[in-house]
Image (cartoon, rainbow, N blue to C red; front, side, top):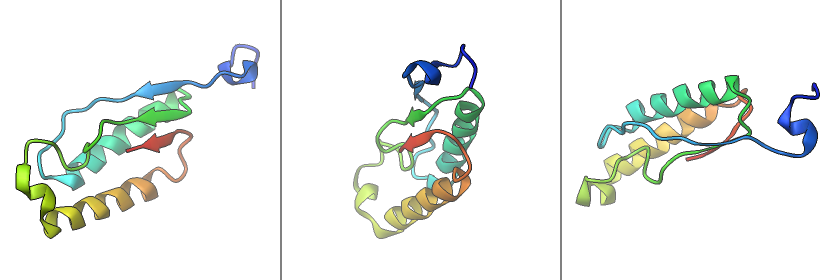
Length: 93
């Protein structure tokens, strides 16, 4: 870790990530999260924070209460966990 590294001086790089969310398409949103997580890894980010409901989307009203969507979100989250296992940043999804 060189002198110019923020981590050497007790700081951490945090990223507030935004993305275009596909409504009710957790698999596509998980791929977008992983794409941004890889970019954050390349930039040396320690913590990457994503908006709430980034895997499911907001404007879907009662769909948020349906088991198929909830199951798809759980599967997408598992994809994000597995796909980010070797990346530096902690992801807050």
